[in-house]
Length: 243
Image (cartoon, rainbow, N blue to C red):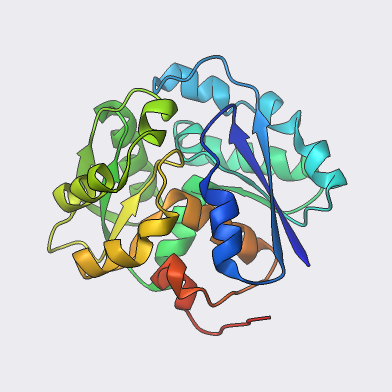
């Protein structure tokens, strides 16, 4: 059994994590802990407080006691709003406090894009324009070329969590361009796990979504690879180890 630990902001929708655990169909356990938050708002100053090191490190003991072998800060915006260097410092502090390998969803997107061999990406973000722009800036700092950004202007995780397939597919189609080698959907509040194969079929290219890459990143930290085509192209890369 490989136990993976995730820190999610507050009452952030967490439905996709048990779904992903089921779709992995392997000896993988997913443990999710909610962290303290001030308010559910997609404003930069609020997101920076949400991802403060003090708030993240306050909850790692529960994951350690649960036997987690790696921990991922499962918030894209709560990471990239700190900038490239700030996000690295956030993860270093989390790893030190947890006593185990650590990462964040923003870095998971970068590593997943490298894994599937793409450089030109489109971004389908539910965020307001300024927050979506910071994600694009983060990706560029990692050496990716962002060819398109679509921001839906959703102001809270609760509102994004209420989206269903029609809204998700519409945003993806609006953001995608012929130049993009992959589409990135950064909001961890969106329910995307059930729609990955259909999204990739509709767009004709790999789709990386927040919950998907977050779990993949934790597996990467524990040196595990699982073949799970229901979770998209990212989970069909070689070499594959399937229990």
